[in-house]
Image 1 (cartoon, helix red, strand yellow):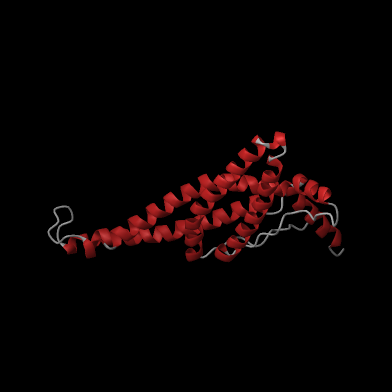
Image 2: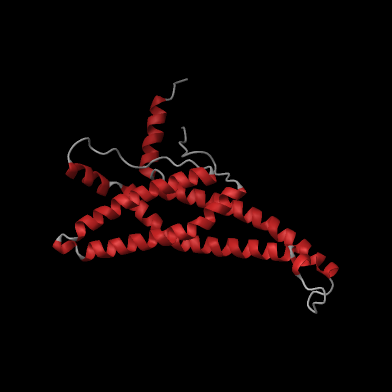
Length: 211
């Protein structure tokens, strides 16, 4: 049996992971606010049909934003995520909208931007805490007052600087691990669903050469 994997195991670079994870917070805030606002307005006014265009904008905008997220994960985390959407009918706007609504990937896109906000907040707090603590301790011999009662002479701050280097090394490892974990999260939610993967595995097995 052949296993179809959506790309390779995530091994993001440290710099790419750091940039990606820090950007997650503004992206998460914008996505959460947009989804919640448009959904509330659209559902609240759908009874008079005024909310239908708003809900349509929500679905199309979420799909476009999800494509941007896949591209961002590929560019910064080095993680390719296949497009999960089912093909749309060639003709008929009703059939095309029905296909979008019945596509599970559409609803996973919405769920991703709801979940991204709390996930990004936790990631941001962890990253800022680790890196700021490490940098502050490492640079302590430079900015600590010479007559400080807390740290003493500058030479006495060198052990703290050594601790800061250890914290920076740990921050590097944590950043890369968080980048890999988030890459798996994006792949799980924004990639092909379980049904699509099973179909791909079935097709691969049927095309495999017989020994």
